Length: 570
Image 1: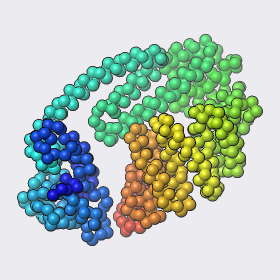
Image 2: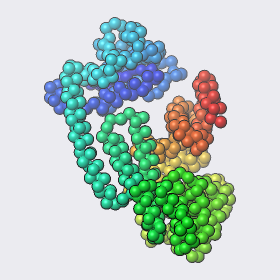
Image 3: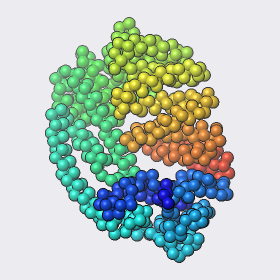
Image 4: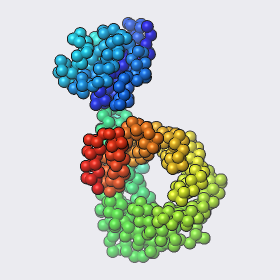
């Protein structure tokens, strides 16, 4: 008889992580050619050969049709044994059903935790073949693979030992190659910049990128390394920006400060730039002060940075200086100060692109200050300019144009002009998709922003199917993006999970909503732990949503536990 699945994993959902590990371990196993030559009955691979039910059974009294069909279609039953599994009604039901349709010898057990006579369900009897994962998970996995393939364990284990040795040799060779490449990379980088700290950052980034590509890491290790890599990238960006401004100040004092900055760092460079001889209000005074602001940003002293930005624009209020200061202020949520600076600029003296930038930024300021009619007018003026610019030079200005469409869409949603909002968000989405086709790495996240915005909009319009479509599409892409950069994409993923869960609550899909809320909560706990000021409010939002959901599902104990956390987060 031909079976769809080689194995059905039966487990308590409190053992879910273990069951997922087991399923992935079996399905990702590469069957060597030598083993297939020896045993011609073997398949090419084990992908999609294991059934593992992902739904937590709560209210039903009998196995669903889906589970019964999966059990019928499975050649073997693998029971995850633990104190949770032996107490699970559903594990017993799955075993009982399988025994009615298949031979007893096709049932195996794998002990996750506990004594065999206590955790192996009595319904299995004493003859069931048991593998003990407590003695070593890798060997236990190899034993299960041998059972699933129906081949002697010795053949699988000997091959695995040979592969382990081969991988060790490859890692050694790769390590030597990496050292050669790293040495060459450092030499090349020295030719680009003599800044010692920038070189050190570059070296650290190379090492982390090597570890992420070459080594087998746990999810926690990957997260830690990705966070460190992102922090280094931010430092690199700040230093590159500082070096750019050193290049713009062509005084002998600035050149001296640059040499000191390259060899000794920020503090020594600032000491030179803040000496008496640098205080004269000459032609380079504004640039020198912006340069100081950049150096203080490197030191995370944003108050001092603000002081020197302010000195710069008081003396020289040209667009380049003002716009640098405005970008800094908006990052620091100083909306009123940014607005006041932008309004002082004479638009008639600016280029079309500069004028569009100013109008768009002013629109953002007015929206944040809840002056929505004025914001709309400013966005429309910026839009007219950016449409003309994008027509002349699409590669350079299409992203800016997409942002203005996006900003109008957000504004119209706030004013309840929902169909107008839909129109603008679609325009932004289409442009961003075009950009992402040309450069996926740079623009894919922007595509998901438009998808999420459309999901929110259709939720408000009570078009649940369309809302679910856009949220789900954004969620699938953001799940992939977070693997590349957890720190950057975690907030966005958590938001989409929360908003899709809320949609499921409104449509009565409570089990799916709970699963997504729990996933969003885990991410937002991490975010709030690292930055409570920025993410404390959204953490409370998800906690409160889960409390309501648990109560709605009659899970009062879970609701009470989360209520305590809500109070602690207040």
